[in-house]
Each structure stands twice: as C-alpha cells, then as structure tokens.
Image 1 (cartoon, rainbow, N blue to C red):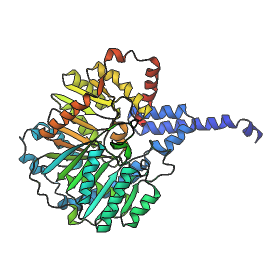
Image 2 (image 1 turned 120 degrees about the vertical axis):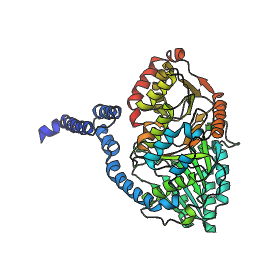
Image 3 (image 1 turned 90 degrees about the vertical axis):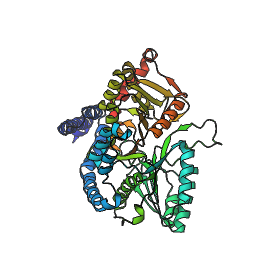
Image 4 (image 1 turned 135 degrees about the horizontal axis):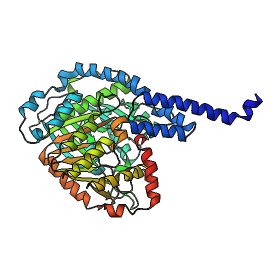
Length: 489
C-alpha cells in the first residue's frame, strides 16, 4: 500500500497511457477519416485523462451506430407509409422538364439527391429570399398569424428574449385559437427559460428538446446537434435558412451602436417543396417525442401554386446513409462552368471540398468566398485562416466581411443554381450535425442572390496573397494549432 501511495501518479499515468494505446488501436481499426483520427490521437496523447474523457463521452460514435441506426430504420418505415401523402415520387417530372435549362444543366445534382435520399426536385413552388433577421421574422410572424391548422417550429437556437418572447406569445395565442403547435429545439444551444417552456405547455403546445444532455455548457461543441432552422405553417408555407430565434440575429433600429451587425439569409417557400420540409420535421418530432404523430390530410395539402421554381430539399445527419449536403455541394463545385460564389461563417472544409474549390479555380472557374473578418469563435477563426493561403495560391478570391458577423450559408453557381440552408462548410455540419438545405434551380433566384452577393462584397476586404504571407508568425502558429483541432470543431 505504501508503494502504491508513493507512486500513485506514476501508476495512474501508466494506466492512462495503457488505456490510451488500447483506445488508439480501437480508433485505427474503425477506419475513420484519417485527419479526424489523427486529431483524436493527438488529443489522447497530449492530454492525459482529459483526452480519454473527451474521447469516451464525445468522440465515440456509439450513438451513431446504435441510436441513429434504429432511427434510420424507423424513418424508412414511416416514409414508406407516408409516400402517397407526400407526392415524393416525381421522377416523371424530372424527365418531363429535362431540357428546361436549369434542370438540364444541373441534372447530376438532381439525380444525386434523388438517389441518396429519394428527394425529388419539385416544380410547383413560389420562393422569396429574406435578407437578415428583421425581414425573416416579419414574414414568419405574419404567416403564423394566418395559420389555420398547425405550426411546426424546429430550431437550433431558440432563446428567451425580445424576439423569442414575441414568438412564444404569438404561438400561445394561436394555440388558444385551436391551431396545433409543435416545437423542437436543440437542448444544448438554446436558452429557453423553464418559465417559457411551462407557459407554452400550459397552452397545449407540444414542445420537446433535441437529445438533452447533462452539463450542456460543457458539451456545447462536442455532441450531436440539430442545427436546422425551419418552420412549417399549415403544410403549404415553409421557412429554411441560417437565422435562429435569438435577438443576436435581428438588427433592430434601436439597437445600441456597439451591437454587432448580423448578416444572414433565409428562404420562404410555398408549394411542393414544403412537403419535404414537413417530412423532416415529423420524422425528427417522432424521434424526440417518442410517439408517432397521426398523419393528417392538412399536413400535406393540395398545392395550387402556378409558378415553376424548381426546388430540391437535402437533409443530412448521423442518421443518413450518405453525407447528402456535403456531396451535393461537392457535385455543384465539380460541375460548375462559370462561377461559384460562397458565403459561410465557418470555413473548415474537408479535403474533398478544399481540393474541389482549388481545382475549380485553377481550371478557370471564378471562385469567390466571403467569410467573417472576426467571427464569433476565436478557434474557428484561426482554423479558417489556416486554409486561406492554399486558396489564394490556387487563385480563389477570399473576402473578409467587416461590417459585422456574416452568418449566411449560401452558394450560387453559374447563374442557375442556388443553395440556402443551415449547413456550414465545416466538418461538424458535414458529418455530425443534423442539417437541411434548399437547392434551387432557377435563373431568377440565382440572379437575385448574385446581386445580393455583390452588395455584400462592398462590405468586404479582399485578401491578397502577398499581404497574407506577411502576417505575424504568432498568427501562423495559432492557425497551425487550431487546424489540428479542425475535424473536431
């Protein structure tokens, strides 16, 4: 016993590294992405005990292999049961509209999402691009006021606050009128007060957190998140994009001058594409509530939209067979012929996306990327900066947005394809989070988004390779260290 007490730290350290080497062997045998495995191994070796705790609680994929596999099988059964209600088998429409320009040019992407997720392109849609939170919430609140049957809300961040409380009050009023209200929010990211939750429940609102965990502040960046931001009203109006329910996202006129300007993009959709949003909401709500909602005709009403805006919805997460949104973005990059305009708050790409962007630029495609100058995460900023030199060397034009925080997650390609959604260009969005994006095949929308992009460029500073190379060595060291952690951010 005396020997044990005298050498306790050496014994514990030896035990730690014995477990570490066993864990490393386990990690190598599971053929994870090499860069991610290297980051995990680095954490295990560099952080005794802490590295093991991080790995055990957050890096293992036991939830992905068990919980989400069960969810996947469950979802497939539900989708088959709802198939006739959803009007999702529209392959004949793809064939019918082959040769209509935008669809013909991006048919590879259309087929990818159709084969990956059985998500067809839908044509009877009317869309409106909403710039910044004040415009998004103005439209959302107006539509909620007109709701007759149901309101479905699913958000990554749903905070009590000025905008959150206005929404809660409105939802309670509609619930009191007899409208069925269902709410899903990410447990870790949201800051809903218990008083607010109790109030909604007292009005009959069904509200459930997504995968609640212990010590949410400690797991903020290390567990699975439902990163989606969407709403469905009466089954025929949908909202999708990057704007959360939080005061931070709204540029009120009376905001103090020191309040950071928030630049974001959302999309309002009417039509068949809302059915795909509805499917994703119902599948997720069944999962978190533990019950199966009875499918009502009003969930999937008949659509009388005469307009022909082609929209395809892509959803991805740990429960999907493929990295659907990442593969769609990669396909869009690889099939581009003229230009690729990207806006993203977090650019921490995997090798496939990074290589594709650099190659596209080197073969003559005009590639532009807008990222925040400072952002809201120091380590993410340094990780992003570690990729800039390679981009600039390949001729990619990179711009720092300096007016405030640019949080939009958008892409415009060749004047015909637009992507708007919740997915960042980072490993977490591609592989860990639950995300959802709308892909629009429409020259009018692409032209509008290109004009928006050019307006945003006026609030940026272009990065020049010669100047970038002159940044301090301390910055380069921070970037190198942050990049080691990039696959885990």
